[in-house]
Length: 448
Ligand code: URA
Image (cartoon, rainbow, N blue to C red; front, side, top):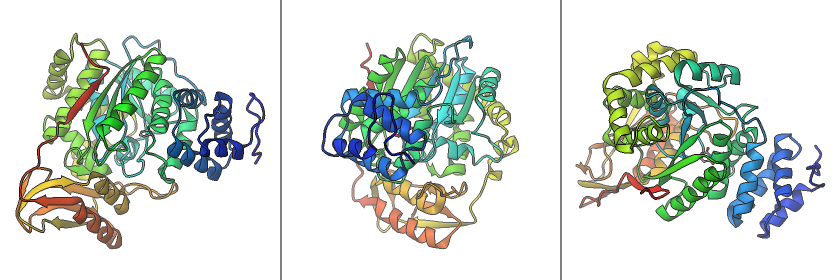
């Protein structure tokens, strides 16, 4: 391994780039390109990039450094040209949450409205779930398609959902899995570069960002989430894209199910016109923005009506079925979701008292799902598609002592015991109900 690879902008040493950031200095574009290129070409080892990521998380990056990192990651691979497609290409990306299965609903729903959705998603990151892990809980569903097949499916179906390939933003695939296991996710600069590099490589015309805020988000406060949203909107606009960011609540899990196959099941409920209110509301809102940016409705209000009708008429679910079939998934499991992977055992977490659910520490719910095997603790871990948590009570619900707050679906007793202990701590029961939090908290840039 050559630790002093030549970047083309002069020879650097990884150790110097790490120390410069550790000491709070601004890196040059050439130094950042050296780091990204060196890691992508296996010339700089994991441990040095881990150290750099931690320094970047602790010291922050300037706007120029963030732009340089985004550009280096974007150009670590190919930038798709989808200009031959006859309608706008719009995607959505979430900064990551717990129980956030909106992508599974949005890709087919928005495609059914006549907007192309070329979606490149990620795996679970930290305590948050990932769209690819969810899709892979449908037996046969292939998220590792070659780009030529991705285009064919996009043309035939209007949407296609894959993970990063060697061709598209390969640097982010590597950085992402390293950040997942080194405590270096929660940096707005690293999140911005990660999300925007892969989204800008997709050949899209517009992007709807779902920036999560609250105890289950990487950004815990509205201020931090707004900072991240502004950074991403600015980056997208710099590249000439239409970008809108919705700050949405992640102070408790979205919907009632957390875990890969469980979330596919809940997404199907929404596509069929049912499902929990919060999940349905957010799906319709995000879909409406995508449809509006894609020029299929003159206002977001009109676009909402389009989305609601596509669900009611069954066209959105039909599109999901088509997508699953084209990507090799077993559609009989979609038609009968009880045939999706099922955990062997169940266990309830009971309320210790009478009262109301005052709050749910949402990150702990995500971590409990990871502990059950629904996410990764090390890069090499495989994910158990069947395990997870079904919530019966959410913030504001009245409870009596002994009521089931949630049910764990598990395959290992030892893991279940650890997850249960965490979930018991995550629910706070109080004598009075909390003030409800708004689901959609802010929209950027300011409209009107
Ligand atoms: N989602 C991403 O794609 N990257 C991040 O860094 C966080 C959430």
